[in-house]
Length: 289
Image 1: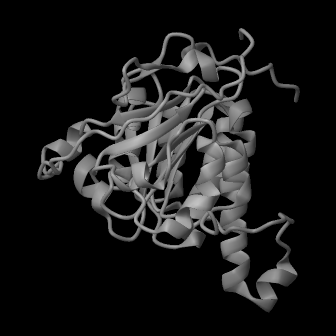
Image 2: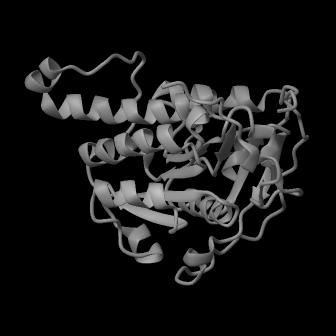
């Protein structure tokens, strides 16, 4: 059956306050959807970034889905995870619970929930935000994508499941715009961590503190012309990021997500001079939706 053209009207007046000088206007993403990535070592605030965005979007009409990996930390913050995929299907359809947690301890569990997300979103086409913490657990840095067959499962079921889960991530990223799905994924590194399609389609990038100079070469092209170097990334404190968005590059300092602030100790920001950099707008003009 033919479906109407997706029109992301909810984007027109929605904003994100992520600690930039001015809120990010999601109208800039109305034609593409939001594909966010946060990169940095552990303890730098990547999870908080995904939660903060999810809380804000839930208040503006989205259903926010938090994918809780093995540690079950998100469940302790936002309530018990949904029991199974059928409960998830009901939550997406009824939309009475604005923030839902799903527990995915393995790529197979993630794949099952992801398939339900894609099926329901294809039918109802109402805004959903998906936060995938520790995305490298479910997305593999495959260069090419191909359909996983039953023969693949017979030969190597583990590899086949991992590949299928990674394909779900790719589907969300590449086709989420037409299903009103917005996504935010965290990873430890910018290369050899997530499927290439995630980095190809990202349009909101948060780069946290970098300790390893070897991490700089893959990141350098994003900062070309900005006078930002590895030393500037190395000087970032927890909760600070360089944000690459439609309007260019900005340094941001994120506030704590509401539920996380209730239990987390405040991060200590070391005494130092703020790193200086030149603002460089690398964003192309976006046509009006």
